[in-house]
Length: 239
Image 1 (cartoon, one colour):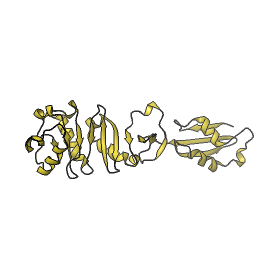
Image 2 (cartoon, one colour):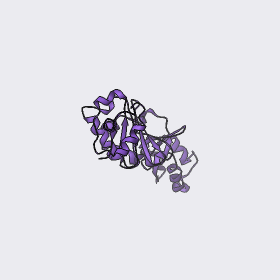
Image 3 (cartoon, rainbow, N blue to C red):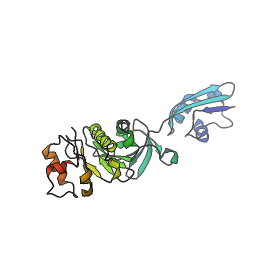
C-alpha cells in the first residue's frame, strides 16, 4: 500500500521507512502504529511523530522536527543544540555555520540566555565569532577580529551597553585591538588598550579609585607612573 511521509527535512525518508519496519508481507491489520511512532520519535531530529493507518492498505507518517538554535562545542565534540540546550545531532552541515557558536562545559544549557541578551546589542552580536562560558558563571565573547570581551558575572548588560556606547562614539571600540577584562565583581568591565590609544581614550567617570588601581595593575602596556585619571581612561565601569 501507499506510505505518505510528511514534515521531514533533516530526517531522510529512507530512515523513516526503515523505522516503520514494513516489508512486502506486512499486514496493516496487525501493524502496531504506536510502536512505530515511538521508534520514529526517537530519531535524532524528530520532535514528535504521528503514524496513522489509511485503509485499505496505506499508512500516513507526519513528523515535526526539532529546530537548531546554536552550535555547541565542548572539547572535541561539536553538535547542533536546541534552544533548551538539548543536543540534536553532531554538527556537520555548512548550512548551520550562521548559528551562534557556544563553547564550554554546560554552555549549551545557557546558550539561550546569552543569545537573547545579545539581541539588544546587534552591532556587537554581529561581530561575535563564539560565546565561551567561563567557570559556568560568566561569558567571554570571542570576536571575529581576534578581540575578546570578558563579561562580568553580574550586570553583563551594563557592560555591553558601555561597549556599545563606546563603539557608537567618535572612538569606536572595534577600530583597535583590545582585551576587555573583568576588574571586580561589582564593575562592568575595563578595557585594556595599547599605550598609543591613551590619547584618544574617553574617560569613564564614577570609577572607584580601588577599581582603577586593580585595572591598571593588569594592563601590561600602561606604565605604573600614569596617574589615576589617565588610568581611568582605560576603564569602562558600571556608573
